[in-house]
Amino acid sequence: MIRFEKVTKTYPGHAHAALDQVSVDVEKGEFVFLVGSSGSGKSTFLRLVLREHRATSGRVYVAGKEINRLAGWKVPRLRRQIGTVFQDFRLLPGKTVAENVGFALQVIGRPRADIDALVPETLELVGLEGKADRMPDELSGGEQQRVAIARAFVNRPMILIADEPTGNLDPTSSVGIMKLLDRINRTGTTVVMATHDSGIVDQMRKRVIELADGQVVRDEAQGVYGSAV
Ligand SMILES: Nc1ncnc2c1ncn2[C@@H]1O[C@H](COP(=O)(O)OP(=O)(O)OP(=O)(O)O)[C@@H](O)[C@H]1O
Image 1 (cartoon, rainbow, N blue to C red):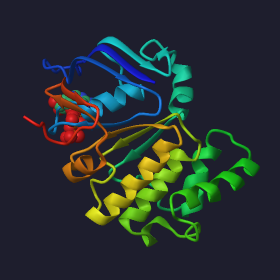
Image 2 (image 1 turned 180 degrees about the vertical axis):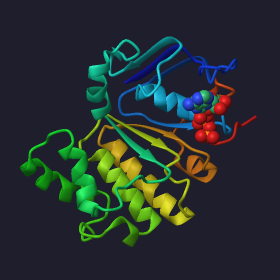
Image 3 (image 1 turned 60 degrees about the vertical axis):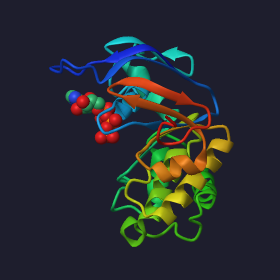
């Protein structure tokens, strides 16, 4: 589903590579934690998958396509297949919960009837039934992140990318969010999550890829946050 072949990314004006010869293969339906200290290259990895940046060298394949070579006009179609969730939720403050989720479908031209069916179904999936008409600032952080996940998932993407999704949440809300991401993963969606949350990684026992200084230094099938050695 996601394949990096000797991918190097050097930002303009920087001598040091943010990613250095990274080769990684993520199969369809996998759940992967991306860990590593600040500046190790996690966000760069995720941005390359979204084609927000282009690799300096090497190849990045998403769903069988080499996306470095993808024509610009095809990038929106790629991104439609990838849901994104961030630490800071990024909800539209002037829209209700249902409107925030529905808007994701509206902008890609889905018919009203689809939106009317998919939004309540997805809000139920994330445990927000009954909160469709609330505004984001009337919700807890954990609930706001559930809205963001509903918005990311409403189009049933092949891949869900989460960059520090529990970074602003208390431990209890974080566990709830992880259960939800696990449920979404079980529907067949590939999940790649960058995190500093050691408790969550240790609890979930999923594949762990560790980056250090732009290189993969560990890749374990049922890993923990810190290296065992
Ligand atoms: N847009 C950019 N322009 C220039 N340099 C960048 C850019 N984004 C990241 N970098 C640099 O690339 C390196 C990797 O950063 P990246 O954001 O990928 O790390 P990270 O592991 O996601 O860190 P964090 O855990 O703090 O989010 C760092 O040295 C950073 O300063």
